[in-house]
Length: 392
Image (cartoon, rainbow, N blue to C red):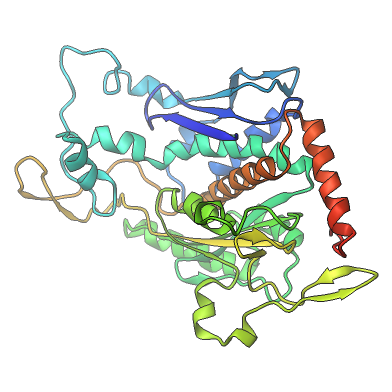
């Protein structure tokens, strides 16, 4: 069974992750993990924290000579900024504790978290609820990419909307070209005219002490038909993807394929017709389903979008209440980004990669990577006899 757990606080000593269930012999490329960590820290509109940290992964267990051993893989990313927070984040009791933070930020975990956990200091809530903790998710996702790559599955993302400015790829997108353009863009968009407008919008929001949200799109190509299941609600791949993406801080909506657009069209303009010929096998002329039908991948590119709200910490703080005295105050301000949608796309890639890796292990099993790949190739051979031809 594939599973993972993360730990750590935003200003604590380190962020950690333990991954279990990856097949023995899997080649784990640590350079790839560090590349994904670097991508998470990029994007126009990020704050000063990204200049302090330079995230790299340490492996404490589970990998030998670059290959998974079959046991739990333990990962650590050190917080360099912890040196500036030793007194405020001390594990041991201190003679004089720092003053509590009591000005809850609207839209953040502060208010509900302080009431739920019975604390008078929102520091105890913000440290774990901070998006800094997505570093661990990206590290796990990067390890999962190594498994997906062995199966010919590739995951990419781009920003589809930022601050209300839309960036459409068109009806028959070239995802590889879009990925290359997005990776060269400071706001990770695939269109230069929109890029310039978005950068100007971020600058304007920053000058006003405001923040911006948007939508990122994650695409996975090379997925064979049959990942996930129609049998139970919690085995449906679309429900698992939605849960994973909604688990990212600040994500308020998720849709696959046409998503909410299906509510505005008749079925004849929604469902993707199926064709077949001996030369190319099954084919579709549209992908409104986003590569998932009945809770399972159908062989088309998996396309999922997530909407990120503007960040809750504003340089021009919103009105709030002192959680101790109940007096009117302005919300707490701590170092913040103007916009983190480009980075959120990288985190979204990681979450989609984790879900797909779990589904691959679930479907093809095997204690070793060789066994898993034998099962995978046998499955492709079996469905090819039924008329399916892999795009890869």
